[in-house]
Amino acid sequence: MALLSTSLPANLTSLAKDGDKTNSNNCSLDNWIFTYVPAYIMSISVLGIVLNIFVLMVFILHKKPCTVAEIYLSNLAAADLFLVSFLPFWAVNAWNKFDWIFGLGLCKMVNVSILMNVYCSIYFLVLISIDRYLALVHPLSQEKMRRPRFAKISCVVVWILGLILSVPKFINRKLVLHRNITSCSEADPTILKTTESMILVLGFFIPISIIFFCTVNILKSLRNRSMEGVNAKKNNHKANTLVLAVLLAFLICWVPFHLREVPTWLNKAGILTDCSSMKVQSFCGQIFTYLAFFNSVLNPILYVIVGRNFRKKVKELFLLWNHKWTPTMTLRSSRTKLSVFHPS
Image (cartoon, rainbow, N blue to C red; front, side):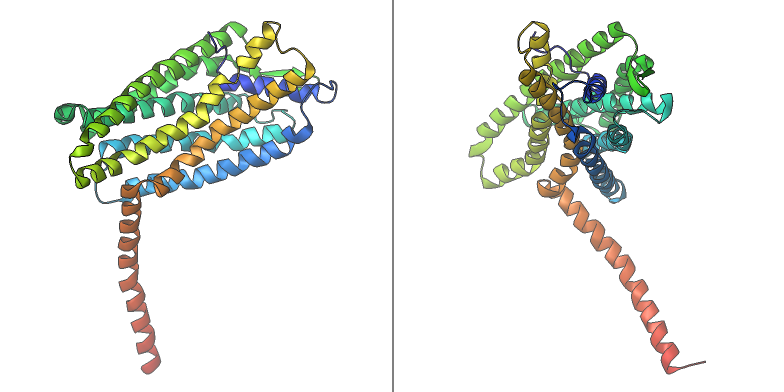
């Protein structure tokens, strides 16, 4: 097994330990953890909140009902919004040198929000991949499997699954006082190892295998249809470019996060135990974690840049709002002119 630990909340504990060792151990990270990291987390939190709310408002306010793919993408945006809404607490915690000041309730909620995003995001992408797979590889099954009602039920199941799988983390998070620093840490190492194994299997290997299978068959189907004409190729391209872009962005942001514990495993095996290796290990572990957070900001940007249908919806909404505001402004202007020419 190449991976050992994939628990994001567990990384909070390791970061806290790194912060605690900064003043007493030369083999530790510099103080950039307490300066640049909080600024970065706060930035992606603000951007993520604004952009994901924008995406959700477009899907909600548009007069046309969402397609199956858009239902999945809107739920993915909701999962990203759920994550970035709790990140400011982590930013303040890092700025405060990992001295947790928000109480036990938020200690649990922040970590649950992170873990739920890990599960929900990947399984919404699984649903998106399956939807595209059915649409292109098995189009005859669209009437049965690719219905908005089925998509909504599937999203509810994913949210419930993410919540259930996050319960052990909610139970195991405790406030621990050490050297006048209150840390939000794991209470039971056994529960921690179980959670890490669950994330590795249920949150990485199984969903990635499904996505890989669907994506390979989608690409094969698109290649086989390349002889159907320019219009068919163009329509297929429009329908799948955004989905493939979101999948690629997820892999770029999250695969390094799941691989970040490989150096830790080597360290426990007696390899890479020197000071330089430990510094690189800690540095990469944190960078990969924050790269995973950036995925929640990258998704809505991809909707605007790559999603042609999404841009079309945005333009239609702006035209609708402009149409509503123009008569109102014209009426006010006319009343102003009348009041000038006919003063009371």
